Image (cartoon, rainbow, N blue to C red; front, side, top):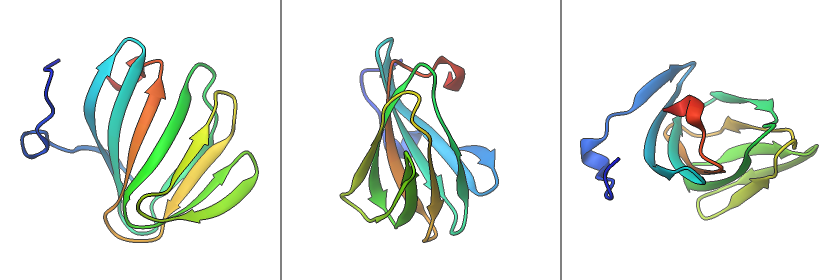
Length: 110
C-alpha cells in the first residue's frame, strides 16, 4: 500500500444497495475507509467482535443508532462504536459520506 492516498486516483468499490467504499489506508492496527451512501441506503445494524470503530461524517446527514441510542449526525459529527456495540446508519441525503476508522485493520476489506 502506498504512503499516499490520492482520492481522484482511487475508484469506488460498489457494495450494493446504494453503498460504495474506498480504502484510504491501513496498517495492521488501523484502517481508514471512505463509505458513500445514496439517500435512504442503510448500513444494517451490527456489532464487531474484534474491531473498534469511529465513523466521522464527511458529507450529508445520517440517522445513527449506537448501543440503542439514536442521533442525527451532520458533517463534522461522529459516532464511536467499541467492539461488541451494535451500530447502524441510514443516509438522509444523497452522497452522504462517512470516514470509518477501524482498529485493528479489517482484513475482510482487503
